[in-house]
Length: 523
Image (cartoon, rainbow, N blue to C red; front, top):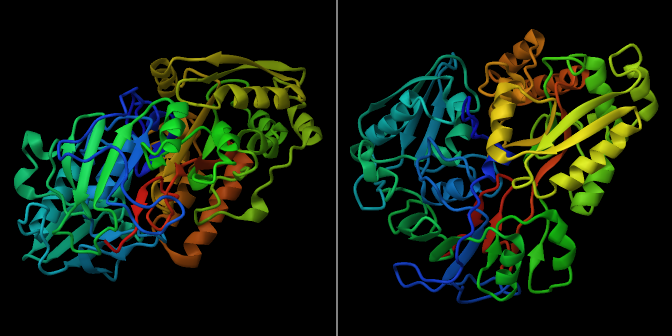
């Protein structure tokens, strides 16, 4: 998911910078329409007992609850909490049947048939039928503004048969369809409301929570009594907006909020001595990257791109920015995802080899490149840019650092009018489809991570990998990784990471590698 002028990608994959772009300063104090206070009632970090209400602060407001359009972390978190899906990723990240009781692929892999559980209901008490599943996904397939287009691309149509049987007809085998159906945007909606303006302002849903109020900067949720799964331990959730990270920390320390969703890693040392708060890096399904426009000299030369990658001290980056709590990365697949190979993750710089690669290139005697980044969105952008500039200076590549206003940055990236840029891409579920399609496919929606890179051999590997499963898929994913290192269309720097801080134990509420909140069950 990203918000670019040329396209809003996602496929489950979310561009880091765009996902953080909606931050708006909003007041912390106040009450929801149901009279819930802004503070939690109940246990702190030392107790496993769940309070009646938990308050979570994001650095951005909720802007949409339409699953076809949601890209920001606040949006997708609300959708995830209220949405009922055929499958649920759960705590392990492995999809398990939820609204569906079973799913089976045809012998040729060109269709999947799912059987729904009996007695399903939406949050308003109306029955949930297979026709609602059909209408939900047919809308998604026909919606030209759908930011999840890449993950829907293999689906030809969806049909229902009776009240409990639904079939997905495919253009090609889609082994990861159950994983896709566990993504937050795959929430099932009532067919009767899909055409109404209020459908996504006050949605009728089928997940563990139901929306009780939404004022833009403040969202109130309550347990859904009609949810078909285990009831969450926390009765009420309040999601509020505090843009400034220091203010979020202060609110956490005073108990006004229970969890600060994501903080700049620079605040980790300040939280270390506070025994009432737990703060740690949570690795995600993606990476931070140094993007390159491979269309023009000198970056159209693979030797220059590989030299830049070899010169960067990734371990110093993660030590400096994340105090060593994040994973330095040179591979395409991040550590939490399948396809990752620790043996291929070479993070120690090799300046001598980088200089050898530059011999005979446009940068053989030195060159100057422009590195752009939007400071309003990359909280450690200044620090990261200076570290990279220091490393590249050792091989004769000078960087002109340019802070760019976010909208201009987006436009330049989408049009390919840049040389180097600080960026990031991540997914919400551990499936390769989104990340590889957007980052390495020319026609994947964002032109191979805005690089303009084209490789028929890699595209053939992608096609094969996404139409198989198991150990065979893992081998193909590792081959993609090897090809990525050889062609180096852009440079990965570190695992995408969240820095949540909480007063409550993880058994009550936590941020998962998906970047989605998980509330414990048992209420």
